[in-house]
Image (tube, rainbow, N blue to C red; front, side):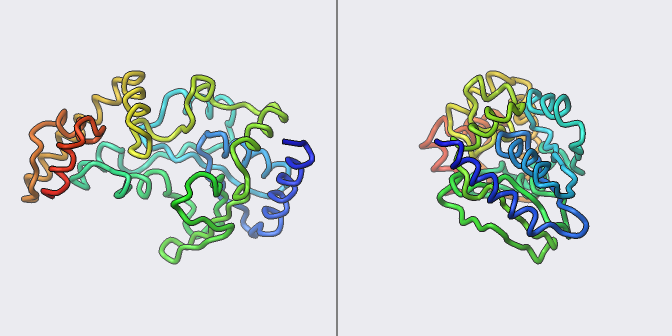
Length: 249
């Protein structure tokens, strides 16, 4: 990876931000992850007007929240109207890879009617179609992804080259800083997270208990009896049991 190549990436991203800058400035979606660290740095280098926001999910890792508060005091820490635990109860089902209502209500809120900057890259997922600019009629957002063509190696090259701060969890082997227990992570990652942060495991189980009450109130069929059983299914600890329960929904 040459510095000249990285410079081309930087110049490209800065040009995108300058060209598409809205009159009221950007809403910069800041997650505390490596990509948003680079996005924030390039927005400053571009000289564009923006206000940065971190959407608290209530399932955030303490280390990431502390990192943002210590290094990015200008980032607004926005609390949700409902916690992760309340959201699970209201939907009467756990969030899954296919039904990620938690992202809609907790991570992707904010920025309505604004031009939103994100650190999304093509390399983040080959299954999801990504574009440089997209819009949503429902909330009036226009989303701009200036880092679309970057890859992780380039992100880290820029962070190290510029001496940018980053969350300590990366040095401990974490590759993503999403919600604790996020179903987008693999089994071993999620189990490891709950061993590290056992209080969050307990909070999910309590939420699942309330979820079961809500399912019974709504007359929804379920073969789970306890929050622990839901947690076991959710972590895919018993694949055969998971298949049976999914088919019985």
